[in-house]
Image (cartoon, rainbow, N blue to C red; front, side, top):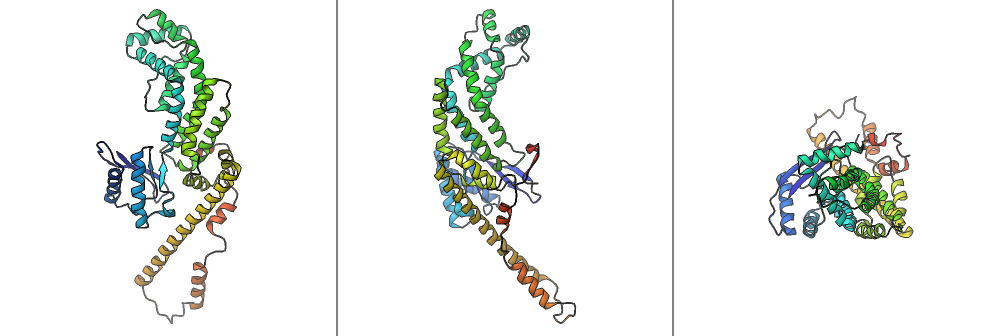
Length: 380
């Protein structure tokens, strides 16, 4: 088990470090996973700073999260009462959804996988394949290997192989050992499937980034995927309809309910604010449920802000008391001291403003990023 820490440093730069590798022999019980995770964060001295934990989909991990949430909640270390503590890995959920879809053409995928493997295993076949491709004026000469556990690599293999669909039959004519040539109608199915998976592939690249913040981007990518699934639900092609039906069932299982953390992260992107949930939720939920979820997100956001405000006020009081006790003592009768003014400033500076920073932030217009939104970094 690899344990990775993500945090924002004092310079508002996103940081990521591997904290530990832990050997977890089978059967990998949830209680044991929780103990290993807690020991790791305690060894690093960060048990007071853990806000969320992201895990993949496994029953043992669900048990581990319940144990850790209870442990942290007892000592009041979790913000929002632990409602934001457990985060399912979005990339892993995307993988589960797509794997269900790919199962509809499993035989075709296996045929293409075998063909790619057959060509790449022999230098002689590679040269022959490249020669045929050149004769047919097909750019590129290399087939991409597949990785069965990573659907995006499977997608790239299929997309690449499609460019050479006219080469495989010619290879079969010239190499008697080649017996896994995909039928021509197979490529039509692959093309249809890839047209659906392209949006998933793009989303995976966005949310799997490690050099920039991604949590504020999850919601918009989920909405795009939901729109693709909805638009193809009544496709005229039978196997596409069957594929989409399975994918929608998996989508609803994991993202059919309101995800507070995903919504709050999107709102805190100044380009989006509350407008993002007002726009996205009606596309994801029935109208009544969408309004309820918008209210729930707004309530959770204000509760989180109040909690941070209380923590900050306590920290400021401690800092003031600390400075007062350690600072040099001045003569109280000094003519340079304006006691009334000091008292007035103390009162005004500790009185809460009529409008909180959060309300002020939400009421201001969204930040517009111009023609190149990809150049924007929400931490800068």
